[in-house]
Amino acid sequence: MAKLIAGNWKMNGLSSDLETVEVIARHSVNAACDVLLCLPATLLGLARNIPLSLGAQDCHTQTSGAHTGDLSAPMLADVGAHAVIVGHSERRQDHGETDQIVQDKLKAAWSAGLQGIVCIGESEETYKSGRTLDALKAQLDGSLPNSLSGDTVIAYEPIWAIGTGLTPQPHEIESIHTEIHSYIINRFGSPLPILYGGSVKPANAREIFSLDNVSGALVGGASLTAKDFCAIIDAG
Ligand code: PGA
Figure 1 (cartoon, rainbow, N blue to C red):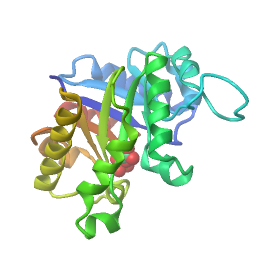
Figure 2: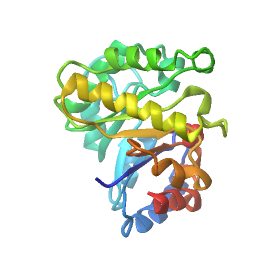
Figure 3: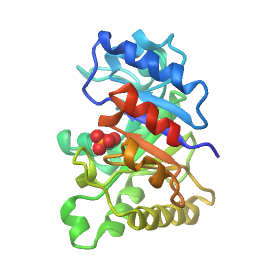
């Protein structure tokens, strides 16, 4: 299966940055991998005619209602999103999102026909104390419902690797992805793509993509620059 390289622009990007989206779109035409760019919601409608698969970074659990400042999955689909990230560690930390909320957001994404990219990842403290697998399994238990009724991708992002330039050793990434893969098979009977995220850059992308059970990447900082993101796409 083709790798999926997903960019996550987080709270970055103005309309003047649509040029970057266009460069990435042109580069993606001949890519061997699938490319997705998760833009801030303010840019989705503006970018929808650019021939590139676009995603959002969060959605509400409800389809509409009195939730000032929030955006629902149908609204995001309406402006051109094909996917949405749910449960990014920055949402879990900054907005107190629990596994149950993440699960409800995933169901909302499916109902709107969006692919849900479910993020999990351990803190530095958990990593250092050797409890990573237990933490990830607890997040998977809580963030995924018992039956998967929509397009779902898992993104494993160690919190301590996000935006820090640090990454786990390749053998650690491979072993964690293999554990997640086994968990998914045991619970659901068929595999899901498992992306790695956390300081993916042109210099380490090729090695990470060569690891067993790594289906692609979720890329933050390096997706903001066309040159870096295109180099990662070339590695995919
Ligand atoms: P980073 O972010 O690539 O800047 O480490 C990854 C993410 O948070 O998705």
